[in-house]
Length: 274
Image (tube, rainbow, N blue to C red; front, side, top):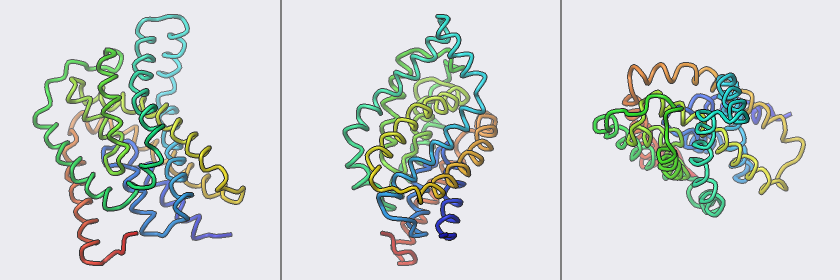
């Protein structure tokens, strides 16, 4: 048994769960942490990083299970509010599904790099600071109030998160603020949009790289998956309350500081990034 590999999966699962739903880029953190720990081969690492995100997504499903169940029942019963909710999720999901299908290979091969992550972290932090100062007043205070054009615009903004370090949650939340959503509505819509987005990304990546894996790899995935679920369940409960009171500024400064630290470590030779 490779206890070091299991411990690395344990740590990476916690990192994923803690960062998936806050605008600091879970993928960026996973790339950096996995690179420092020299975790697994590149191909297995990429699929692991995507697959354990599904554990974090299931934490949202669990936490919002009643709301999602009500929406599903209402959709079947042709309730207008529920149907609009479901259609908005699907509309927002489509841009990333289409663009990601054609671009995912290039992204994994060329952009899963710590220096790309550092640059995206810093740039994204600056964008968040600008959004907090200049975003228009909220006109949509609940997810159920959103219209299709809000969803479509957020869907295209989500595509920016294909660049590691940008942050899927960061792109969709800040995009939501710019398009007139309240902090609460933007955060919750980001949660719900993550469900089809990350399920699709996980299934596709595991299928494409299916020949890389053996049953012996299962415990590594299981450990990361479970830890991501537990950590994300904690964050999801606290995030909406926190951002409703304090906004996203603290995350912006964290992104900038973390990105600068990566660049500094590379420039000084403190860490030899691959």
